[in-house]
Length: 100
Image (cartoon, rainbow, N blue to C red):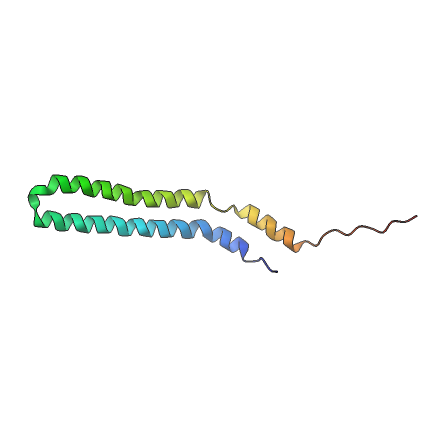
C-alpha cells in the first residue's frame, strides 16, 4: 500500500482548516454588518443598542477564526507522518543465518 500522499495531506491540514474557518468568520462578520446597517436604516434611534449587539455578534464570529488558527497550529504533525511513511517503505531486517 502506498502512503506517498500522507505528507501532502499533513501539510495541507492546517492551511485548509484555517482557510475554512477564516472564510466562515468573514461571512459571519459580513452578515452581522449587513443586518446592523439595515436595522439602523429602519430605526436610527436604536443605534446604540444595535451597535452593542452587532459588536457581540462580530466577536463571536471572529472566535471561529481563532479556533481555526488553534486547530491549524496544533494539528497533524508533519514529521510524525513522514516517519510513518518511511517506516512503511523500509523492509524489515533479515537475520543472518547462523554458522556453526
